[in-house]
Image (tube, rainbow, N blue to C red):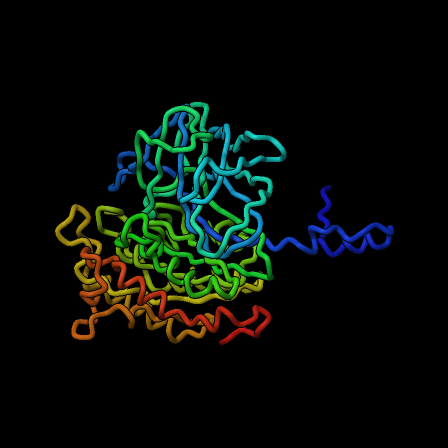
Length: 417
């Protein structure tokens, strides 16, 4: 039988034995300052290509990430959640994205290398590297052994650079290839200088930033982080392109990944959920040509389950209405995402979100983004051009529509509904 010790119990035992209070329990304030949700790889039968190497061997990866909250120390998380073989990390360094040199070396349980077992993750030891809110970091990772890419993060409007051999100590990183997405790096946690919290954003490609300027950090969660960072609140973006609420998509359903991607984040106090448009749009399209249509009951039941799980853990839930999508992906190989019947379900679902009283707050992105003269469409100034994803201006409007005062309120505040 295993025994778990609560931090308060450890402190009480230390006091009873006449030993000092463990300093880490009193001083550490870890929050997730940056996040990329893992998703499983797929094969060539799916409508979209993975656009990342299927296998890596003796190469170094360079990721650039922008934090939300700052702090005095860092810990990095690398995930092999959907992998079927171990992933060997030969060396990892982290430092300012615009700084000279290769950054600070990381250790894992005191060792310079680590192995991520299938289905697992590894967390680095803390490294003393003070970072300001909204700072950009470069993370350089050496993969010395043959490494199949079975667990990764697709797209994200971010570029990963690749160099041959071990380039972790190179003062100038010279890449030989690059691609979009994230491989294995899944989180950066900071030890905040003052009490801090994490807001997790759970969503699909609209949250992952499709349609925004690449490598510019203009997704709406990034812009929300701009508003919350001065108050010591971190924003962790758990968006996955193709994600769905009640069914698997280009990632597991929200119900399946809620525990790891949301409730498992250190310091989480709030979750903002923007999901459902792929549940509605995928059936009958090239993404899920033979799948039956979603139903309102399916969507609302899934949402109520998320709320129940969150509230049991003291996490507040903000639900966002689904933006308009008339004409989505028309004229592309993925046409069929929109139909009048699908839009009718979207409107019903939005009405339920607004009126059900199931959430602590509602963000009405539909009202913010729709064309007043044609409410089924995105406003032209907010449309990235595919009639599904907003562009930079649309994402700015979404971030501005979040009621920051509700997120800034103490988590001990009674539920708002």
